[in-house]
Length: 260
Image 1: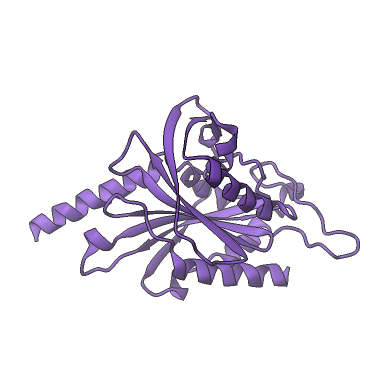
Image 2: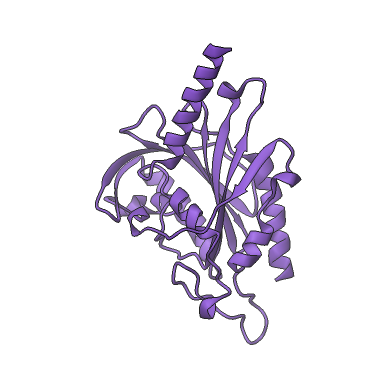
């Protein structure tokens, strides 16, 4: 039991290091800040400073979901037995968590985990998702950080299209964060998935941290909203697409958009 406990502890430390390393997953800092942002307050501005557009006079277009609406739509662990879901707390966002690539064609792959993406988020909330088989924690533990966001009409689709295009051209890049720190990443395509209105996956690896610096990025579009999932396994490898969570989250976002 002692040996297994030490293994579990080492595994948990590896996961924490992997998912909190700003060089690999700066989206986590954003997710930590996002639950306090509300695109429906402060004159239509969220913490990212983006302005939420009003619905068109004809009523043809709805305003993007606010952070309050996204919080309500965030999947709860009570809805998914076997999962522990914890909404992020409000924190100050850091400019250091922006990511700029040395290769422009690779920028769409750095945008999902960046605080300053090309297509500005109108509102956003985040959460951590843990799933594990208590009988074999070390080998089955997977941690996913998720970020729900609303976008201006058409931007979510453009974001996914740009990611697909980037994956055809980009296999590696060096990113510079807002503090000037440079980190090199290797990129490869992830598994094909059919989720939401459309989805794309890719594996992002910090080449300087091969033991715990790899994550699977899954970006899912639901109408004018998106959900980004960054998943790592207890073994230090990229995680699997969190399909059960994604399907439930897609349904709740779809319902939120329909309700307006």
